[in-house]
Image (cartoon, rainbow, N blue to C red; front, side):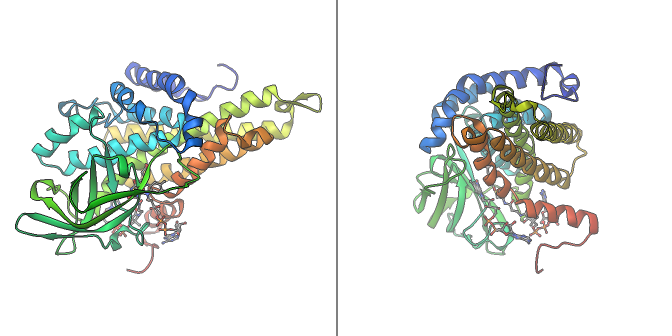
Length: 391
Ligand code: TGC
Ligand code: FAD
């Protein structure tokens, strides 16, 4: 095993040839196309839209959805490995791919009519149509059940009124999957097409995190949605939460990639940087940090590998995904901070990945269920008592 190899428990041996090949091709793409530009994109607050056709060629959009809709039809371990490799590049890029696949294509696949699936999914897999997912509102983040966005039935379809906040890819999306309460108070999903009268988007400026990703507010004012754009199979909060489970699964894998990038950077730097007459890697305190990072990354990898196999065999539950998302994002954030420290002053520059990953992971820690919300989901599983708040 090469020194410091980040596959300590030889998970590669457990992968199929196809899974290994998928991982290798995305890793190569990230090395060749993402790593050379991503620090600059982060500095310039720019989403690298030029990568979209190349990502589509790699088959990463909705990669675990079926081939009959133009998707790659991969299993969930291969899908997870894609997310891991993309996030080793940047969490913003993985976010874009997560939102496209798990939060925009998946709801159409799961709750859409056959016509909607045939119209949208192949084009989204090719990256010709970009999607976003509007659940969070200015006053309802962790508690989406309280949403105030409304869809009223009319004779021609639906009229949407309300606002969504913090929406990844909001202003660059061709379609938004928007969740709103209908007349009986039930939550339904709607496909809102860009250019629909009464629909507008405004970007969040000056983020210090996920700067290579677009984040927007969405506004709906007397916005007429044709009947054919409601997702007919959606109904209740359970529908958007099912989408979140898909995205959280990808994040759990993705965070390992960010942690790996930080660890590899720290190991290399520590071996080269000399202080007090020897490489800082030769100090016990540095070795303790590196040993803990490798151990935590390895635990995260093992959890995700097992989770992926359980997802493929239909044995997993949302609570498994919550543990993996909660643990791996916190782990990656800790690795990023530790790696940043090992790099000393150089660690605060964009020349090295850890501080960029650290800033990005602050968002990842908050979105898709904050660390606290996943802790409470596990608490409810353990005790049977929901502790989220008032009924
Ligand atoms: P609760 O009563 O617990 O659940 C309502 C119904 O949904 C079912 N359910 C789930 N189903 C699938 N997956 C899950 N994860 C599910 N969680 C719950 C549940 O069984 C129930 O079904 P039924 O049949 O009984 O109706 O609902 P609650 O209102 O008490 O909420 C629970 C809570 C707090 C856990 C939930 O609201 C929550 O997860 N809040 C966090 C919100 C969140 O994560 N927002 C994310 C927005 S999207 C985003 O951040 C994208 S980032 C994009 C990027 O990657 O860039
Ligand atoms: P709040 O819910 O106000 O929480 C604030 C703090 O209070 C947190 O620490 C939280 O853990 C804590 N807290 C809340 N409730 C409890 C409780 N019961 N017990 C203990 N502590 C609690 N949303 C989308 O719909 N689509 C997107 O594409 C999307 N992309 C995003 C991109 C970025 C960059 C960011 C930062 C967010 C994005 N979000 C998106 C929104 C994200 O899902 C929410 O920010 C998240 O769900 C938390 O909601 P909030 O920010 O309103 O925090």
